[in-house]
Image 1 (cartoon, rainbow, N blue to C red):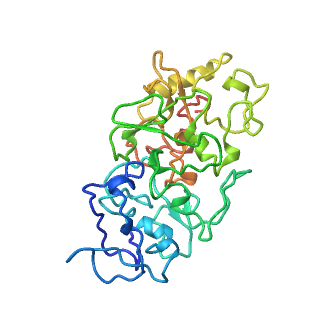
Image 2 (cartoon, helix red, strand yellow):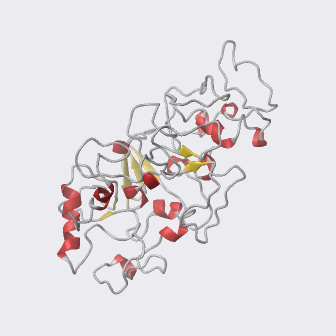
Image 3 (cartoon, helix red, strand yellow):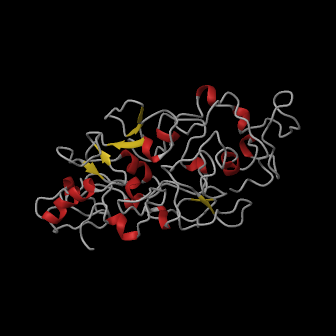
Amino acid sequence: MKRLTLLLTAVMLVGAAAWAVAGDFHNGTTLICSDCHVAHYSQQHGYTVGGLYTPLGPGGPFPNLLRDDDNKVCLACHNGSSFAPDVFGVNGGVPMVREAGGLNVASGHLLSNDPGYDIIDGHTLYSTDPPPGLGTSAYVASAIGLRCIDCHAQHGTTNYRNLLNRGLFAGDTVSYAISTNDLTKDVFEHAAATYDIGSVDFNEPDTRNSHYAQWCSGCHKDFHGKGGDANMGGLAGGVTSSNATPWKRHPVADVNIGESGASSTYISSLARYAGLTNKVKVMDSQGLWTGTGADNTLTPSCFSCHRAHGTMNAFGLIFMSGTGTVTEEGDGGVYKDLCRQCHTEGA
């Protein structure tokens, strides 16, 4: 795993006894100003006698009294360390299948991509390209391009994973429950400071909406909406029993797997999904995620097909066939296997 040249030789998080994740961290006693900021851009010693400290990046002082540029400051802890989730490239930190996968980086920076990761494979730090599906979104890239803090609030929020309250639309919160599920919350984190795919599930407090997808629409506006919206197609209310108004883009909020009154092909898709050993993540208003019996409210959303940071597959896609060993890329499946998690067409 690569390390940040000229930036990180050793890091100590004061008061942090174990690794933790954004959303359960960067707030209260875990918000340590000196981890990221330095008042006078002058430091030749640790915080205590014999203590460690994060060296200052070259070319400073930096805006906002930061120790280095925005992304390097974040990756000083979030790239290969044992006390914070590794969010860049291959996981070199705590062993797990990361729910969000790994970021990549645009060329021309001290940090380079891990083997297998490319700029087509997910979110690309320092990229100045407009996000796919930008539409009329208010997102504008910073001078250095895409930054971690374009999505996460470095000083903490009440949102899942410290996601920003963008203020770009009403209801831009992604709420979460810890340890005990709460069906009025968007995300269920099985325990505090968990980051692996087996410890995160998604509720559906509003069967006509996905707050997670709505949040993503802050940058990818054209890809999001409800059935009947001009950019999405489909029938209003999420009903898909007619081809009178076919879908233009894949629904992300208001259509249950197998929801149709006209075709057994569509109805059987729920049985197909429920019968698979390895399943992609979906929302469930009942908090069961089985798709069996009365649990027929499974709804795909952004995270069903993509990992938020990225994978070694194009667009951060998850190629899940339903059997095999699960990794961040899937379980050894190919492109069409992702579609066939729910859809029965083809062989």
